[in-house]
Structures are given as structure tokens and as C-alpha cells.
Length: 151
Length: 151
DNA sequence: TATTGTTATACTCTATAACTATA
DNA sequence: TATAGTTATAGAGTATAACAATA
View 1 (spheres, protein in one colour):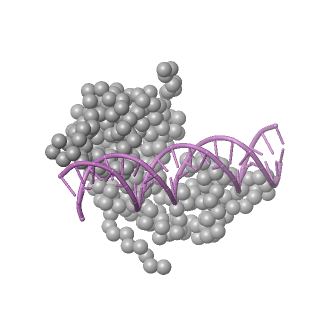
View 2 (tube, chains in turn blue, orange, green, brown):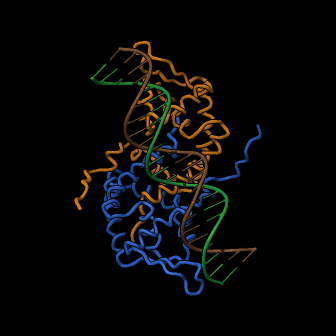
View 3 (cartoon, helix red, strand yellow):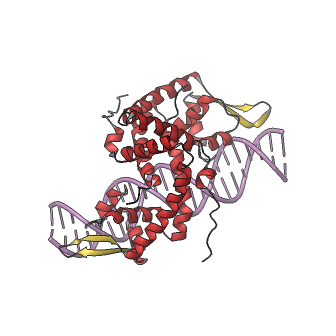
């Protein structure tokens, strides 16, 4: 009797969590990538779009449309760096911060509802484990070299 | 200081776990959906392709190509149900079971390496929590009715 | 007619590479 | 020339709907 795969179990869980977030985000008028961008900028401003993309695990070409919309909606500021006008200084506006907090409140309320299903012990262990595992880099998770086996 | 979003943290973790599985699956000559199919059939045979698709969270039209390949490779059996020839009885062949166990062994070895980074307490709580949360249906995770707000 | 499986189509997401501007 | 950002293109993955076979 093997234990279920961690990857498969979490994959299903994540898809459902994302499905739960979508209506909340739609009501706030932002996409999932938009939400990720606001979350990354919430901690501290970022000096280049490429760095921001990397921080949220996206391609730099993929977030441009997202940034366009967030800027148009007045949720982020995006100005050329006076010291190097190739780069774009990215930061949250007050409106962006407020909207992010509102969306995050609703999203975490639903997550809290699910976490309440767990015994307190397991819940705390789970949250600590997620924090540790999510902090690993992709390389650390993938692990040792996986040499392609010759046919 | 808000806690990080569960969805966002797990999203990143899952993407990396999947990336870690891909080379293993490639060496075994199956895709991620192929692996999911084998895993679902490992517990017990299934009477229709639609039921199998639902069990692994896929669309019924999406697994057809996967089933074709698995059958061609002799990993699954796929016969019309004599009692209702519209349906296809799906089951694992011995070769399919062996291949699944081999792939699962490698995949779980890597997962075990990551789990070993956690204190034993957290690890056990984490595994129990994942089991409970992954067993929830999508509807249970999404939660209460999310009525679209009129503009 | 209803259901199972299949095929066809369109749509979204993603990745790659070419292009513009600044340095 | 090198870097940051943008645009264009193609590819994979996904969802929807139409179709064929069986009941």
C-alpha cells in the first residue's frame, strides 16, 4: 500500500485553490498574474520588470500585458529609472495596496475555512512545512543531476 | 505582516515538483497524464473513460491520445464492455503495473528527500493535512456560492 | 432519445526569437 | 556591444462543440 504521490495530491489541491481564487479576483478586476504582481510589489518595490517576472516565476514577456493593465487601472507606478532609463521602477500605488489587501483578505478567509478542517497540530505543521518547502529554489526541489539515459 | 498565500506558495511548489517528475517520466517513456492514468488504474480497473478522466481531474477528450499511447505500449488493456459495447473496460497490464511502480519509486524517493528537510512533527502533520485537503472535492474547496456581482 | 467515445475546431497560455531604446 | 523592454510568431495545452456508434 503505497502512499499517494505528493505531486499528484498537491496538483489537484492547487488547481482547486486557484479555481476558488478566480471569482474573487474577477470581482476585483485583476487576473491571477496581476494578483501575483501586486503581491510581489507589496513587500518592496522592484527596479526592473525582469526581476519582478523572476520573482513570481513568470517570463518577462508574459507580464507586460499584465503590467499595462495594472498601470492603466492606477494600481502600480511604472517609471523609467532616471539613473538608467532602460529600466522601469515598479511600485504599488495606495489604490493598488488597498485592492491587494482586500483580495487577499477574501482569499485567505477561504483558505482559513479549509485549514479549520484540520486538527490544530496538523494545521501548524502543515503551514510550517509549506513555508519551508515553498522557500526552496526549483533546483533544490528537482535535486541531483538527472542525466538523460542513453537509449 | 500577513502570512503568504497558501495558493501562491503551493503553486510554486507544485510547478517545481512537476519539473522534478518530468525527467523520470521521460526515462520511463510516459507523459504526466500517462502517469496519472496508470496511478488511477493501479487501485482498481475503471469501466468508462469518462469516469477515469474525472478521477484524475482531466477532460474526457484530453486523455484519448494518452490512452492510445499507453495501449500501444502494452501498459493498459482497453476492451469494449461485452455488456455495453459503448463503454471501454480499462485496466493495468502487468507491464503497466511494473512501470508505474518503478516510476513511482523514483518520484517518491525525491519527495522523501524533500520531506527529510522537515522536522518529524511537521512532516507528519504536513502529510496528514495533504491527505485530508486533497480528498476534498473541488466544490468543497471553492466553498460557498460566489455570485457574480452586478456592475 | 440518451450515452460513450472520438474527432475537429478554436481559444488560451507559454516559449522563442526578433526588434527598439538606452547605455 | 550589451542590457531592458517590447512585439511577433509559433507551439503546446485546453475547452467546446459536432459527430459516430451503441443502447
